[in-house]
Image (cartoon, rainbow, N blue to C red; front, side):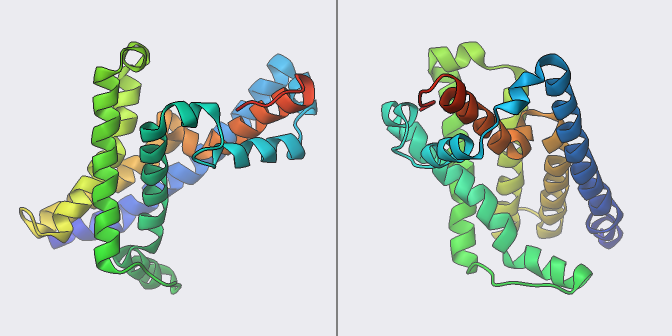
Length: 219
């Protein structure tokens, strides 16, 4: 078991990070080239002013009509993304690994806070899953890719919570948690999770088009 752990935190982790970084760079370059080939003029009206304005409006839980019409979904969405970003960066176990491999560290979250935030991610995933089943317009648009994009982060945090609380074999759960995290890294450039990379660019593009061309707000 120790050799398996050493493999997943060593060579497999390097592979996952390599796929994430190179895959994301490839997707960004290829999407730029595709946009340039299909509609080169669209790149010329990209505006920092309107793009930034749109990003700020959509980062406000009450700043758009979509958020105002679906306050529960807005709240769950913001809680989900905040916890999804903060926990992996500031979790003590993760910072220890960065210190071990690269000699760098930073302040960490208290274990109890990280645990609560991790549980919140799992609860949010359950909410999103139920919404895809129960809300007809969302269910109609849902495909297998959407379920994969939901299942991957859910498993990452679920196995993390189970490992922390020593539910089942602690070593096995820790290894499963690391594997799920590496699967998530590898998946980001090539699945629906790619909005983690493209989200801000997409919002900036839409804000630029609506603000600079249509002369209206996109929220």
